[in-house]
Image (cartoon, rainbow, N blue to C red; front, side):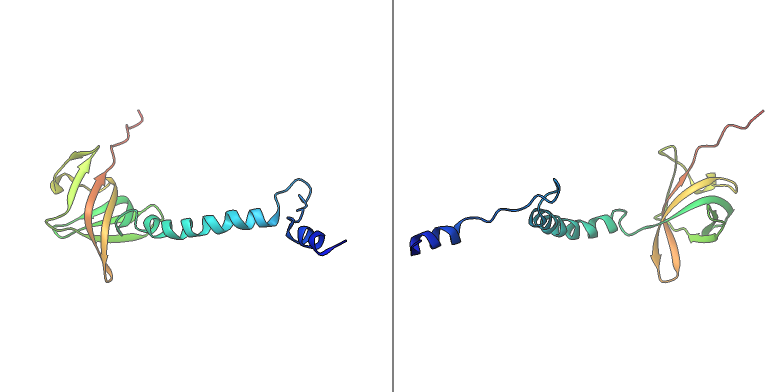
Length: 132
């Protein structure tokens, strides 16, 4: 064996075992290395998918000039302020604040400022048909 043979052997790629048909560790590591930056890049987009608005879902228990009080699906009572910028809809059609009433099921998208929530949109669910 001479020096050229040693250089040839040293530069040859090493055989990788398949670990019982599984991809080699370096392949898995390479895939994870490629996916990690993608996941980190998308995380903020997912977190702010709703423009940073809080969601309050439940049944209206009280409507006043300044707020709507909702009993959430978890039983918690939440007061959400309303202002002149708040929009209201039922079945994707605009309605007025005066159309809101206790017992309406709603989804409210609200901005959180300190410890208060101010409604951006109030979406009223269609009434369920009453059973005879």
